[in-house]
Every structure is written in structure tokens, then in C-alpha cells.
Length: 530
Image (tube, rainbow, N blue to C red):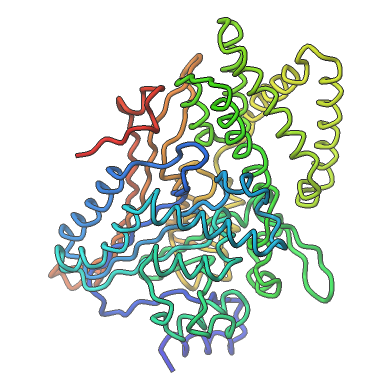
């Protein structure tokens, strides 16, 4: 029995309230220097709807920075955590092209064909260089910085869960994207992931591809992280209690025992947020660009704006942007055909979305009532003529944008107290950092929680380009890149009164602009090379 198992057994037998999570790493006391690097929300897409991802040069610089830090700190072990939404199976035109959507999993053959096509396009074509760099990282760090061990961890996000529905696609991701052969995954690791998801035996077959972990923790780095979708009612599925199984909703917070009983279905089933992503924006972009091409509308500026709509957050900001552009085009007396295509397609995409049963099945009854009312209102405005439905939609988006300014964008102390790294039942792990992504909003908070030593909440934000609004009016494209670095080092100080190890962490934020980003008619089309 290991030392940690003995501690766990003694705690359980003493009737303490401590709880234990599967897979938490307890490093050896005699370990060497260690470096943890974590990023989130890369959203590597197949490029069929817009242009959402960073160029290869950004990743070259990032991987070079990891190598340099390994040299600077004489690192023996590297932990690289990609905290969910690394590949994005939702933002693709393949769904609408094949007449199927992510929630239609019962159409297994068609669903599988689309999923495998998307992941192969991402890995073999659109982002081949990224995955080549990722697979080469361990050997590069060993050869150039004498690093002895490199571990890459990818947690489950909400835009990549469709991979888990298809063993062929998930196996492909392991072997071709990550360079991990299925038969090289040990039985112990397979059983550990199985226990996390509620069934130790579910991945024991060497031919099966195990799920990615839902969370990851390392007591040496004092670090716990999970993607964060479990706090989002739109991107985690509410489950009703029935057939002897418990229910769960996002308002209940962290509940691993319930999730295990439910097979983690709140995070593996399709959700309302998925229907928004695939049902409106991606479909709209694809249909508009196809019709513009068929009608010979060659407007470079307009095409560039359409390509970048997925960079706006939240989604309604993208619709506001394109409606603003059509309004300006109408005022300037240009692009009458393009304006008609955009406004007609937007109306029909929204009505189609509001006609799907899944839209209402996956959201609350209150919101469902509002959506049904909105659909009837848009149809009534359209019957009145004069483009009133588009004017009404634009007005509604402006109201939403105005109201959104009053919602807080930070995290309250009460919320942070419910994060697993800080919860009383997990404090025996002595975590100090709770990380997450998902929101695309980089945050850093220092909660003062009774009973805890100094702690930090980190949100990694996103690792991709985004559109920002200029003061007064206008838009600009920028890169927002945040990475968390944690050092767990041997203390070489000769003073016997000093602790044997030193712990340090820092966040590196890179916000960049440039000629390629500022050139509205060029961005997304050209990548600079060194």
C-alpha cells in the first residue's frame, strides 16, 4: 500500500469530512525541478466557417518560451495542461452541409461521418503544424533542455465532447493528433479514468479510447483545474431525478458523486449552447457566403467580416456586427443584393433555430417561453413588411447589449468558495490555485477564504484572436494569449532553516496587434512567416 493510500485510509476511518478525487497527482518528495504550463480554449477548427485560429508563428513562439524556461530553471519534469475546448467540433459547416446537427446523435452513421471528417480536417490539414509541434515537444525538451519527463494533459471541454460519442474519432485523436497509441495506455491509467467517470472497467479494453479527464490536480504544483462548463447552465445539461438516479443542474455546483451515477451525462449530452453555436451562427455564415458567391457578390471587406464573426463574444455581438455593416451599406447605397441575402438568411436561420424541438428541450421553461414569444414577434413583424423584422431584431440586440453592461464580469467570493480547489472537503490537498477557461474572459482573483492560506483563482481566457470594440465606434482585431506557469523547484539554499522546496507561479499575458490584424480586407487570409 502506497503512503498516500495509507493516509486516505486513515482519514476515512477517522470519520473526518475529507473527500477524495480520482487521479490527483501526489509527486514524490525527492522530485527534481518541475514546470507546469497551462492554456485553455484554443478552439482549433476545420476552417470551414470563418477564420478563428492563431497562425503557426504564435505557437512557434509559445513552444520556444517553454523550452527557454526549462533551460533557465534546469527543469526535470514538465506538465502541459490544455484545459478544454482544444479542438472545436461545433464550429464547422460540415453539419449544415450534411443536413445533421450535433444533437442528432441517434443518426449514428451520418453523425460519425461528420465527426470523423471534422477531426481529420483539423489534425491533417488546418492545424497539422500545431499537432506536429505538440507531438515533438517531449523529444525536443529532452534533447535541447535535458528534461527527463513530459506529460500532456487535455481536459474535457464543451466544444469537443462530440469526439467522445464516436470511438473511431476519439481513437484517431489519441493516435494521430497526440501521438499516443491506444495499446500504450496502461491498464492502471485506463481504470483511473474509468473510476473518474463512474465505472472502473469502462475503458479496460486496450482497443478502446478512454475519455479525457474532467479535471486535473497536482499537489506539488498546488494546482487544480477543470474547464468550467459545470458552472454554466447553457453548456451543461440539467438532468431530472428519475429511475432511481439523482438529478443535477448547474445551480447545485460541484457534485462528482452525482455525476458518476449519471455517467457524466450533464457534460456529454448536447446542450442549449451547442444549438446556438451550430444552429445559428455557423449555419448563417456558411449559407450567406455560398449565396454571395452564387450571385457574384465579390466584396472583400464583407467576406472578411463574415469570416471573423465567430471571433465576437458573446454570440449576439456577431449578429449586431453584421447588421451594423448592412445598415452602413444601405446608407452608402452599395451592395443591395448582398444586403438582401444577409438579412433574408439571418431571419430564416433564426426562425429555423426557434423551430427546432431541441432548442426548447435543452433550456429552461422560462427561456423557452421567451423564445417562442420572440419567434411569433419576428413572424408578425415580417408580415407587416418594410423589413420590420430586421429592425426589430437589431433593436433587441441593442437592448441585450445595454443590459449586458450591468452584469458583473468577475467572480464573487461566494462563488470561489464553491470551487473544488477551495471547498472544505478538499482542503487536505492544500491546493492554492484553481484554474478554468470556458468563458474566454481572462480573470485573476485573490480570494480570502477562511481556513485557507493565500489562494488564487485563474481563468485562462482564450488562446486565439478576438474582435474588440474601439472607443466610440469601430472594431479592431487583436490576439489575447494567456498562459499560466507554475514552478515547483528544489531550494538550493544552504540555510537549514529554509524550506526544502520553493513554489512560484506567474501568468503571462500577450496582447498583440499588427499590420495583418489591422488590415480588415486581409486578416484571416495571410499568415506571416519568420
